[in-house]
Amino acid sequence: MKIALFAAVEEEIKSIKDRVHLTGIGRECATEAMLQFIQEHGNEDFTIMNIGTTGAHSLPVGSLVRITEIVSGGAQFLDHPMLTDRLPIDTPETIDGKLFSSDCFVSPHVYSADFLQHLKKTADCFDMESSSLFSIAHHYGKPYVSFKIVSDHLDIDIPTWQQRIHSISPTLCDFVLHTLDKLNKLDPVILL
Image (tube, rainbow, N blue to C red):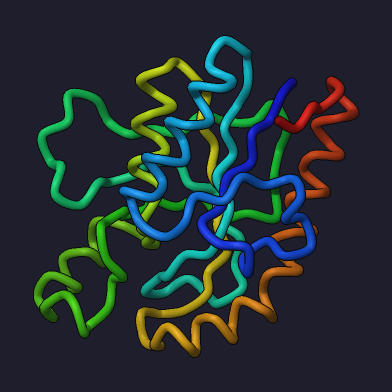
């Protein structure tokens, strides 16, 4: 099985950065990075694994989340739900969650209190790249899985987020390495 690991920024995955393709923050950056990768490797069979941090309204900071569905902010008229694939192994250390992916940080500084209340009913966690990565994977027929670690409760600024990810990144990286090891026992994992 070939796995192509993607994360937004190096700080999220520092100890495994040599195995991960960085997209940059936001949907445009993620689209550009994924399209470039597909141009180089599109004829190969692989699963895209998106990893990184996520904000959440109630999941505890440090929780590992297996994303089961993505809701794309501003794209309510898709002809298919954004349902993610599953790996052929169990990940009991994760919580299943629905992710809202938008063009900006989900926070009270950006969205109204009413919209944030609506999001609490719509999604468990939030990021800025997943909908683009999923859409391109879906378009090219590539399986897509995503695991995120909760970094905040929509209550911190970017400098605080940058400090926090230093403390939670090792948990995410250990989970990814453990998951790849379990996959390798089924079938040799080749990282693209």
